[in-house]
Length: 314
Image (cartoon, rainbow, N blue to C red; front, top):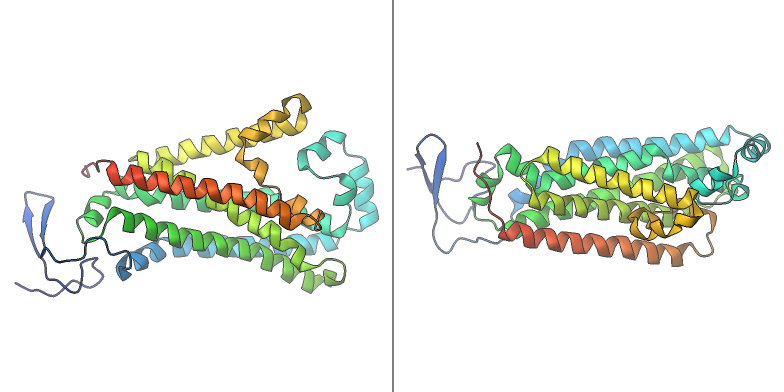
């Protein structure tokens, strides 16, 4: 029998394994008792997690960087006077919707800050969160690869931690891409004399915190489910409901209490740019809530995943 470990396998290089086929699909894996079962530093796990994420991360990073760069450039083409007249013609409900005074939006920094709540940026965040969070558990089960992964000398916690670490690093990359895109736009248009790039750092951190929470929540839902499409549907519906609650709370003052049950109440990057004097205090409070909820979601996902049964692939 050939005792060499196959290239690219998750099998430990310190032990040999014999595999024989039973029936049509079932495989029995035999390994020595001393093999490491819970090693979280398995290089193959990290390689797999990075390989699964790299193409999506590359595309979304280019989109995030390029859009924020383009947004600054387009903003530089609009004269402040003309933009101020346009804002004055808007109904007062628009001010409630964007969450900042229109007088502040008329400034250069205020206009650029709107990029951080633009649908393109939100789409990028939600796409990364749902795609990566749903793939963590229900995606692997749905593809029939989870059973194969768990038959290797790695623990369930190792799988989840590796996936979460790579995804969190990707969330940081997207937030950094948003800020760097803004900086590049300010430099190319010569607006750095009017707007300080450091004022956009709290806004970028707010993007990271919101992405981290939504990814962790998606992972939690994924831990309960076995079909990726259902996980995407449930979390997508949750996000839409949360967005509607925030809009209702903003547009109808008598329903402002709804803001307290929407996690998007902690996502206000445009306010962090417009009010730089209090940006770091507000950022610390808002981001702490989002990151704290995200950590709790990951812990709950780990507990559920470690206790649940994994259905056999059909």
